[in-house]
Image 1 (spheres, rainbow, N blue to C red):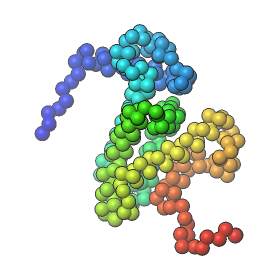
Image 2: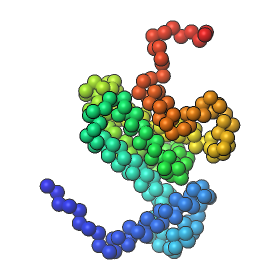
Image 3: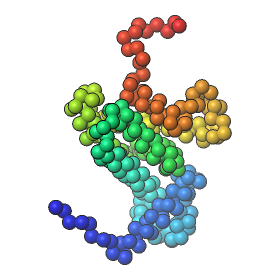
Image 4: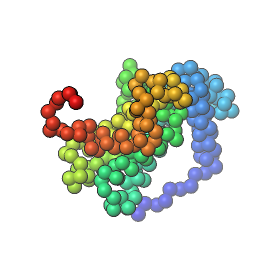
Length: 241
């Protein structure tokens, strides 16, 4: 039986606290200025440290800080997924209800992390297509770490015949990616047109506004991901009413 983790000494606690202060400051500056326009001296000043101290913790400067924020966000989401599937009461619920509950957990996390979500949606695309292959690989590794707790439940569900015979890992990526794609539209509309009148957004008509609400977006994603898009898959493809 593994021994419990040894408690941190004062120096380690202080170092973690300083690092946390720097990341909180960076998150705030990134949210206000955007990653591109944020400056390290602003982050250092807000964290109440010298710029040199910032480099002691993040040798790669601003991009290292960005990756650290992503690491925190992905680790937190992975922990939520793991905690969700560790609940023994899931065995008493239908498969659809369980997976709908998972979607709700994912959406709830990002609704509570709106600053990180906007940053994630924007900067993760840039890093995925970065000219520096090392940055792309680092981003892919983070995404893998985020979906890893979902892979084993998907494998078990496939083995039990609960889900179709598809790659559990690709299915996990598809679920998380679909959720992020939906949130991209919601966040983009709000940022471009304001939350007061999201119907002005060209990708969301007035009749679709309900799908931007928390409970409705969960239902929509559950319908598309779990039940499928086609209501009558064997019907002839005629579009006349």
